[in-house]
Length: 210
Image (cartoon, rainbow, N blue to C red; front, side, top):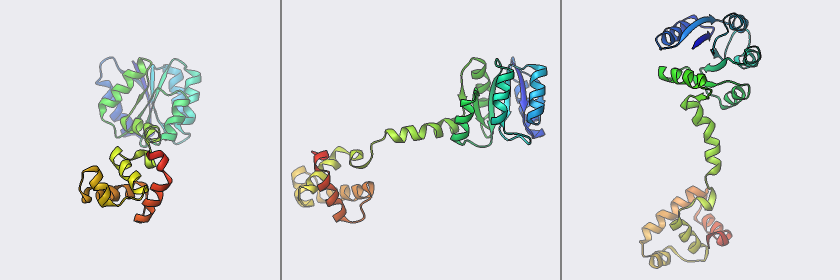
């Protein structure tokens, strides 16, 4: 696997170079410190893989990515960055990168990214993938009354029908303190500042709680 390292920091390039040279079947064929040099080195050496920093002095790695992909369609590009902004990751993926690795990652992550890219797969650092997935996971979680536990929904339904905490406790076979604890947690979950707010909400959602 022939690799081109593109980063404007000499020490970073040196450190990554030593790390990669220690891996089997990996050969660092060239280094570049800016976008133009990256294009030149890529054209000369035609590497199998390019490790590309997002922040370069003459142009963004995101702007450079489609140029590299156009000139060397068979070459895979893995982005390196100090940041894990989901917007940048999505743009990089849309422009054809084969991986996104944060610079604070463990050395093993870089090797995994290289191997995955070489196999035609896409690798994202865990910090990146967790940020990418969070909005989707959150959108699938129930909210409001639907997010309450079955017991809380039952208590809320009974509150909405006009029952007191003592009456609810007697009917459900639990203590009044347990009912009050559920009421406090429901108020927090549903954003109710006053006890009366919870009663009004319970009355409005009787059909959902039935």
